[in-house]
Image 1 (cartoon, rainbow, N blue to C red):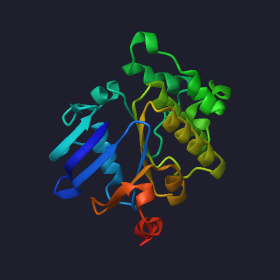
Image 2: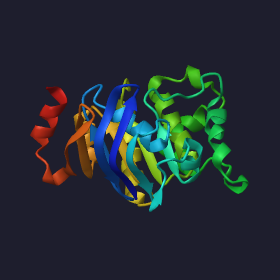
Image 3: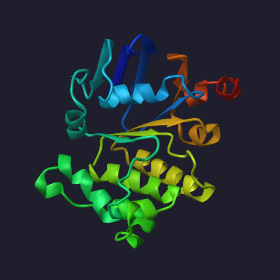
Image 4: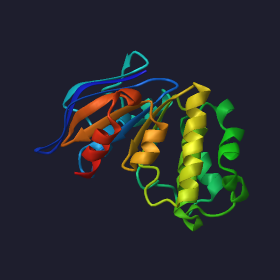
Amino acid sequence: MLAVQNIDLFYGAAQALRGVDLSADIGKVTCVLGRNGVGKTSLMEAIIGNEPISQGEIRWEDQDITRLPPYERARLGIAYIPQGREIFPLLSVRENLETAFAGLRRRDRNVPDEVFELFPVLQDMLGRRGGDLSGGQQQQLAIGRALVTRPRLLVLDEPTEGIQPSIIKDIGRAISYLRDKGGMAILLVEQYFDFAYELADTMVVMDRGEVVVAGLKNDLDADDVQRRLTV
């Protein structure tokens, strides 16, 4: 469903991505792993359209989206949960969820029950300001906001960063549930190896802007993958 082919990305004279290939399929979790600064977030920013690429092609559902702006990619069903969550701290939980209505047709402008089934705490805190939530609750809110758009591709950039273990488990269960429904492709950026390994169908390891290991999880040497994250 998503095909990233031989893309390069530069920030001025600095090259962040070099000939990167990646794919993500409906009903599967593709995990992108790597140490800090190897290009993982740059790759996600290229996929959602926040950063232009200088070479290569990005295709979604057989459509070339390489030059589409982010809002048009969102309308095609691509949703992004950025590193750091980026919720609106002065808006209520309800208002944060409703900001996702912008790209939806009028008839779809509602919060699916599924959001509250996955994250019941959000329903309990609808009137509370986003900035008053804990880090883990803000992460749940960010994922819930993305799900309001009924995405076909869900891109999560390090959702476990700075999150307490109990909520990491909740997020893992939510990702597994969404994958098993079979209606979306999930692209997950992680440094937390155990979390990624448990969820992944396919694993992609990056180093210095390049893909150095890629394949089905069961075909890869888990110890080799883990070593590449710690060296």
